[in-house]
Amino acid sequence: MALSAKLTMRQGQTMVLTPQLLQAIKLLQMPNIELSAFIENELASNPLLERGEDFEAREAVRVDGPPEAPAPDVVAEPGDWASDSLETNSAALEAGLGTEVENVFDADRTAPEPAASLGEGLATGSWAGVGGGGSESGEAPDLEAYVSETTSLHDHLERQAGVILVDPAERMIASALIDGLDEAGYFVGSLDEIAERLGTTRKAVEDVLVRMQTLEPTGVFARGLAECLALQLRERDRFDPAMAAMIANLPALARRDFALLRKVCGVDDEDLADMIAEIKRLEPKPGRAFGDPVGATAIPDVYVVAAHDRTWRVELNSQALPRVLVNETYAAVIRRGASREEDKQYVSTQLQSANWLTKSLEQRARTILNVASEIVRRQDAFLVEGVSALRPLNLKMIGEAIGVHESTVSRATAHKFIQTPRGLFEMKYFFTAAIAAADSGEAHSAEAVRQRIRQMIDEEKPDDVLSDDSIVDRLRKAGVVVARRTVAKYRDSLRIPSSVERRKLKMSPLGAQRSRGDSVTVEA
Image (cartoon, rainbow, N blue to C red; front, side, top):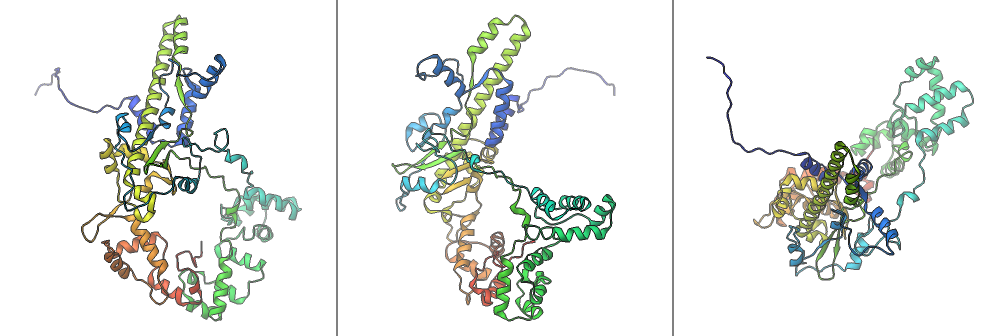
């Protein structure tokens, strides 16, 4: 068969992701912190982009007072979307927001008072666009200004070692030992390796280690949980033979084998309860109190406020991101003064990039607002009644309601937070699996079922501890169809022990304590 070259024409449909579309997708899934950094980089690299604050300041200098209307050189201002609110009226739908918002309270539920809701919901952040703020000027308070500099565990121990150790050789060993600590304060290095590296003996390193174990916080430089607890008990003068026997049998304490503990410690029920209470007051990770970085405050992307007309107002946080404007006047000035063709091409490229950025930010704001509005519409019962009223929800349901693909909904809700009258929640929190109803009615949310299981176990009596089968029967009577293995899985996720362990705990001298999973937990 002879090989030959020929030209053919074929027609087909393919999806091409342009650089602009890729940028829009990338911006949509970015959290506020990453998006702010991205915008700062664009402002530094593109001379045609400027902050909205800089434009307003320049206009305030040029004229006496702020301008009454936006300047004609402003192409797009994503911050404008943050001031829009979606309410239950036809005007919002006619504005092209693409979201059917129906947030009217049910007749059998009472809408919370807006003032009480606002006071209850101020967990973090300020209520931008609702008349609230962190100060009289409307700016959010600088929380980092009230956070003092933290001292790392390494520096804390170095200062103490400089006081108790005089010999320079011992100080070198101490520095090597400090370098061998993990975040919890445990020594995870090798004594032999330190001795070989510093040219000394293992005994010299062990002697310094013993002295370093006397530093604060008590328990540092321990080589295991048992040694850490023993160091703290010795400082409190509570490390007697009975307590030493309990420390040597920590696995039995973890599995709540009180019969074995009474036998090996030689104590009765009352003394055993006192010993366990003493151990619970110890710190299993003495180093975690030092050097913890200040956690970044979760900034709400969306606010939900109870309005006086028995609706929910959904608003974007206008203070979360800087406003970005395109200065076309500056672009025209540069283009007129440019003599070389490459200069004109550079201005055109930067102008196109700036316009695409502002359009992508506008689309991002629109998508997040539509998704948040649909979540509020479907989960309005949660805003009134709490977790027990959560409804089953998935990405596909939101996507079909607002006319986008579920992958778009996933990107719009990733690492995004919504401030509600009940606190600050990640948007992903409102997506829960469905549990079938016994009467073929409306399905139940998995999170709501988890909450019911927690409540049942919290209310059980010592002489009537509920087994997983009993919980299944009670849920079935309440109209929830769930398997026993599902109950066991939800119970484990809540860190609640089995019925056998809870009965053993409630019938022991520790029965007065809570029978939750963290009641007698030995943290490794």
